[in-house]
Length: 314
Image (cartoon, rainbow, N blue to C red; front, side, top):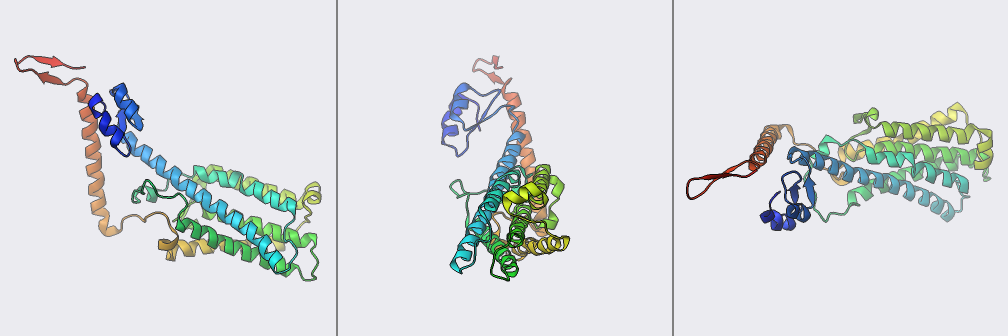
């Protein structure tokens, strides 16, 4: 951090140079990467919090998008390879892309900052946004979605001929698996029962909109003709919901027992380290207070000259 002309070199050389917006010189502001407009050092903490949240939300978004894309591609590829008819028609695949690339995926980008992320170790500046842990989550989710979708399709394809019911059941299973997967992708380390669905209102509206749209495709006659679907019985819907909810079970197993293999973040400090964490937080708060006090006084300090007189700099 700095505010004077003599700080320009250090601000330029730092990984992230921060200049004071009110009391800083133009030279310091030009050399810095970030300008602190209110000269309040606590704002830096808030900015770091938002930055970390955005970064990990992008990762969660990518985990969801990649798992959806992998699953859709694998379903068609496997069905072709083993000689099965296409489980989904072109309009259904297009609908999946519109729903999954639309509101549910976008709403993951506004997920509130997870407190555990704030306690995670700082990442390297050159760290890739797509990590091995992210790819592992995406691939394992895609494998389960492919298995469940093809299982339903194979069970329905009892006479060897693809009917509207066959594709409707398969279509509904894939979409439900992806909606459950979207909920699981809200966090890379919290299980589904540890997350409050109301924390992200945008996600709630996105899921509700997707569910209503999906039901319209299945039960609204004009859309049935377009997407080649037919109405399903309540028993069929319950079967699909129970089957597709296993995506949440897989996600819970990953996060509870294999977090070291699938998680991008570090868990909070253990109980025996809480005292050290509290001491660190108190020291950090004291540092911010002292630095704010220093910069407020810097604007009206008194410099005593050699002759004993003084000059006030404002």
